Image (cartoon, rainbow over all chains, first blue to last red; front, side, top):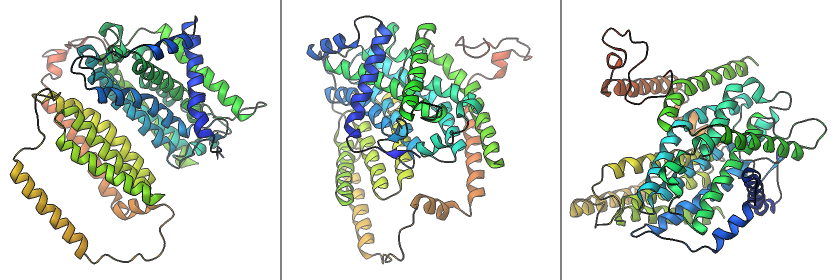
Length: 295
Length: 186
């Protein structure tokens, strides 16, 4: 059973997430690391476009990391999470949806065509990944017969969900990439639109936005562990070590995928999502539902 | 604590609801409306209906994000660079609003509200769901399928390109001819 962490965990959570994100960024660029870039952005002056809607830009860039941290509240580390809400899975989904608003606002606010294109691209991407994504996480909840993340972890004490719901797991990994507009799904901040939604951001705004994207990537990767990879369950090592190991493995896979895969054009992914992934996710949910009914 | 949360959320919801009509930018109005709706979701959580509250947050965020696209698409002056107002027919709207406010207020004050009997249930969401559609579950599911079929049928009927455009007049083409290349099977 997942227990509630002590109160100080509320303050440790954002720090821990930022640390993991910065470590992942360091591994990813394989050079000076994220530290220098963070310092550079912190001291850099913010540039503001003519007739920009400044409050909306600020809201968008701030909302992205906030949404990632709020989503991480239900994330169990070992067998402890900041809050094991009874509807944790829906909470996670609701908080990641705030990223839709955040990226669109960041694209809209600066009064720039290219950033607007990026913002709209993220909404198109969101519509393509969200439906299979929702079905995939619902399948995990169905397998555990509970929306509580702790119960989903408990249900995998014997067999990981990734083993008998591989389709849902695969779809979750794809949507984790899309959620953080990362790797093959980086069209919203694509180079062909001069950096898309992030093009006009500089200084702290840019740090919050791109840092928030790293946080989202870490949270999305880490959530695959309690959903499909048995959470803290595993032999020999304590729960927290297993969580850290599995999260590192998923994160490593996502970082590697970006290097291997070219950017996917959204109109192609939309078709794939509707014609293949959504029916596949429904079929997977049906299989799990039949197994659960037969238990 | 609960009372404070209730009032803070309530005031915020009403304030951002008012701002929807005060802003002269479509984007600001949209996200002001989203703030109001998120506060309503928060109120549901405060009332103990966790699931409904979180689902409200989820649905409203996605819905308002999509809504922003469509509203701005159809606005002449979306960014508020020129004065724009969300209110049309100001005098009529004010009269209608005042009347409905008075009507609701009178209703609230005069209605014979029942006193609470018994204790609140352990899972209010479950009880609410059961009392809303427990016996009518089959009806609700049939209705859901009918609605979904309607949506699909509407899209199929309204699309300009049909299968004869894609696969030729005798439907014999090996590959569909689509304006956008790529995707599944091409």
